[in-house]
Every structure is written in C-alpha cells, then in structure tokens.
Amino acid sequence: MRGDFRNIAVLAPFAAGIGRRPGHAVRAREDLAEAMAALGGHCVLEVPRELAAAGRIAVALHPADGLTPAGWVPRTPPLADLAAARAYLQSADQGTPPARIAAELRQRWPQLTGDWLDGAPDDNGAVAAGRSAVDDLLDLVALPPGREDAPGQAPAVSAWRRDIDSRLAVLLEHILAHPDYRKRVAAWRGLGWLHDLGQGRLQWRLFDVDRDDLPELLPSLVEELVQDEPDLVLVDLPFDHTPRDLDSLAALAGLGDRLLAPVLAWAGANFFSLSSWRELPRLPYLATHMDRPQYAKWRSLRARSEARWLALSVGRFATGGPDALCADLAIAPPATEPTWLSPIWVLAALVVQQQERSGLPFPVADQAVDPPGEGAAMEVASSGDRSEQLQRAGFAPLLALGPHRLGFAAMPLADGTDLDQQLLVRRLLNWLFAEQRQQPLATASQLRAVFLESLHQAGLAPPDEFTLAVENGTLSLTMHLAGRTSRTAGQVTLHLPWEETPPADANRGETL
Image 1: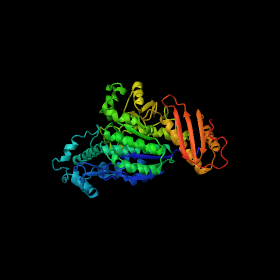
Image 2: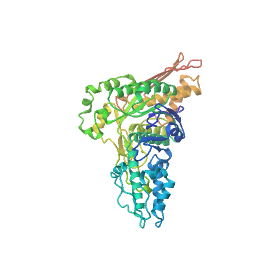
Image 3: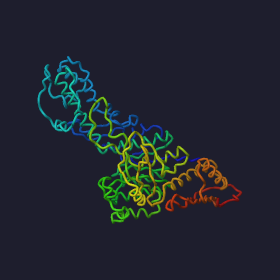
Image 4: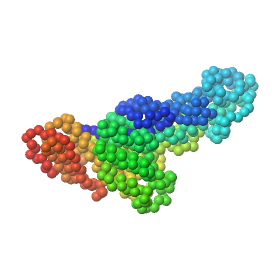
C-alpha cells in the first residue's frame, strides 16, 4: 500500500538547560547525533561554584552512548578531569613522595588543584588543615562500603582519592537529579527508541519546546506543521487541568484537525489534582471527580469535534533502574528516581511497530511492545476498574501487558472514540495522495480495486460498508467501521480534490 506512515513531528524539551533557543527545529532521518548537535549537544546546568568554578557544567550528551554517565563523564569537564586525576592517583607508584604526586596533579590538572588540593604536602604527606564550603557538601555523600586506601600509599594520597570520589559523587547526584537533565534525557531516549524501531526509515521534524514555552510558541508551530503535513504529532510535555494547559490541549486538538493527523500527548498526576500517582487510590469514582467545576474546560474540549484527533495517555515508565554510573569510578549511585519516559513513546512505538509489521499503523489497542533496556518499572499501577474509569474519561493508561511488555488495553481519544479509527483515516489519506501522484487520472473503479487489494495484502478485511466516487473534480470516500464497541464504531467520510479521465466511471458511488 503506497503512502507509508513515516513522517513524525515531535515537540519536546530536546535542549533543556541554559542557553536553549525555544522553538528551534531540525529535521532528522538516519543520524540523530546530527540533530542533537544542531539543537545543542551540551546540557548546560547550574552547579555550586564550590564544585565548578564557572558555576555551571556542560554535560556532553551523545545518543550513541545511551545518554548515561558512563558515556558523558569522560567528555564533561570537570568530571573528566576528576576521573582522570583519580585514575592517576590509583596508578601512582607507592614509593613516589606525595609532594611529587601533588606537583604532577597541579601540572596536569591545574584547574582542579585550587578546588580540592589544599596546600602542598611535605614529603611525609602532611596537608594543611581547613574546611571550605564544599566540605559541607561532601559530608552529605556516603561513599560505598568496602573502599579502602591503597596499600602502601601515603595518607595524603589516599585522602585525595577519597576527596575526588566525594566530589564526583556530589556532581553526579546534582546532574542526575536536575529537572532539565532528566527532561532532556527522557526525550532523547524515547526518540532513540522509536528511531531504532523504525530502522532509519522514519522522517523526523524535531521542535525544542518546554512546557512554559508552549502557549507562546503554539501559533507559529501550528503554521510550520501545517506546511510539513506530518502523519503523527508527539508532544512530550506533561499537561494538567489548569486553564493554560487546557487551552494548549485545545490548540493541539485543532492542529490535529487541520492536519488530519493524530496528536499524542500525556497528562501528569496533577491533571487529577494529585501530587503523585501514589495518591490515585484515594480518588473517588473518576466520573464523579471529573464532574467538578475545575474540569469544566476539559469537558468542553471533549465535546468539540477536533477532540477526535487528540490522544491523552497517562503513566510513565522507566527501564534499567537508576542511571548506572561509570563502573570504574566505584561510586554509589545517587539516591534519585529513575529517568521516567512518557507514555507517548510507547503509543508511538506501537504505531511504528504495526507499520513495520503490516504496512498499516494500526491496531494499537491490545498490542504490546518491548521497551528498551531491562526491568521496566511503571509509574502508575492502576487496577482494571480504575483503568476503565480513566478510559471512559478520555485517557489511555499505560499498562504492563506481560513480563517486560507495555501497551494499552484501549486507546480512546479525548472525545471517547478510538485512535485506530483516526490512524486509518490518516493512512487512507496517505494512500490517496500517493495514488494521485502515481495515477492522477485514476477512476473510482481503479481506486477501489487498488484499495481493496492493499487491504488484502495487509491481511485486513474490507470495511462493512465502503463507497468511493469521483464527481465534478471531487473524490468522496465513505466507510462504516464496525469497531469493537459501539463507542469505537463510526463512519469515516473524506472529500478531496480529484480529476477523473473520461469516460465517467460506470460504477461510480457503488456500495461494496
């Protein structure tokens, strides 16, 4: 079936950190590293000046290394310098006088000596006493058990090694817990997963957008995206029920309506007036909760016709536990949460997976996908009854459908209809546009034959009712979808400009 479902636009905090350019966009296909560099390959974060003299640190991220500390520590001063100095101290000959070691440290890493090497030791290894502001930070760091001084090394050298370990641990904990780092890494990890699933055949349009930027940037982004005509729009930003966020969701639904393309977004716990998902069990029956005055704008949005293009999922996931640190540093992992990835990546992965399997981007409900890494953790553990309540309220909860398998039991859109239906509509449009390019004067009979043969090749039955007609330069297509429930059933109608070669099709408008 011509007209593959390949073009995806993503709005996400790809360049979160100091010095970003909100709204900056790049195109990507095979090389995500180039896209990351174009959007800003360094995640610049503020840190205490006692840890970095400049008061900031530029984390050198790269998609090839999995965006983990094991990859970026060796490329990120002063972490790289601390790690190299520590390796030198480990390898220093036991008989080398501490004064000579100190001189070597100052020569190789002069920017570090003023921070953590206080005073020149004498040949016996004595160091001037004293405390600085950084010592107060280091006191909070618990190094892993079992760390002992190297046999035969002077006390000063062993103290320097412990000091370096402590400073590395403090810097790593500060970085891994920083919201900008976490948002940025989550967005790129999700994108990298989808990119791998698509085997380099997906075409990306990436926009650096953060939650605070979205209301101001949306009008210009909408115009850019209308020109791009993506098949799918992903918005990796958490939405709540505030008027600002609901206005943004309404604008995104309107964007989907203009593009005739689904928009996938996600809601955080605060959408439901929860401080965390752990409080979900205390909510009353969800329909009663969502009937409160603060959700009036959400109910109004659900009633709009364009809401049929907006899919709002809930519940993030993480794989592999907390970010692993460099094994050779032997530093205890900071006590931070794992890097949570939003549910839109699972939903988009299902679409890509189905496209790769059958050439069609659906169905996605009741399908499962293997997330990257191992040991998937779920942010939301909702029961079957609560999941059904969320679905009836217009949300799709992410579920564990088996060992290391994620998916959705149902995929409702904001208006209560089904995402599979809109994916079919978009796929039909792509097919029609492709056929128009291949045979611009095709008759209705020819188009019907090609369409039904394409469904047969994909292993899908034809719709229950199907009419296709070309009259007066307009192609009209109507299908009735049976759906799994009365809620997901419905009628699809498309009208597109089309030319037809004479003589006119004798079977025009025939119901199959």
